[in-house]
Image 1 (tube, rainbow, N blue to C red):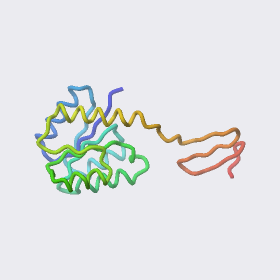
Image 2 (cartoon, one colour):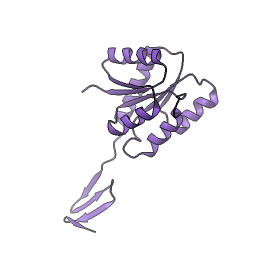
Image 3 (cartoon, one colour):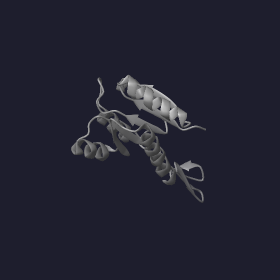
Length: 154
């Protein structure tokens, strides 16, 4: 199964360049030029990776990243900021908010794909939370925090 990337950027030329390069490397790509549409899509179809501009017309990328990190279903999705905001403070803020990487425009499309692959490799090595833990007859659902013994709720 091919890895899926979502691009949220309002610059059409950037979106086309990134889409072309990621598809050429075997990724499935969805793109959105408005933050609200992209965020709604992410909630319905969590991808493997998000490429996110900070400067968007309706909602900035920092807020989108905050919302992703606050959502249990979406918090583990890697985010790479792809933005013209190049100051050190911008990069630090983006990484502290929860981005996995930060790429400044103009950029090398090949390097962006390589960085995306590196982020995805790191994600594969991190053990995922087990949602249901069983020890003997004890069962704990970590998602709902329900405990049962021999099938009976406690």
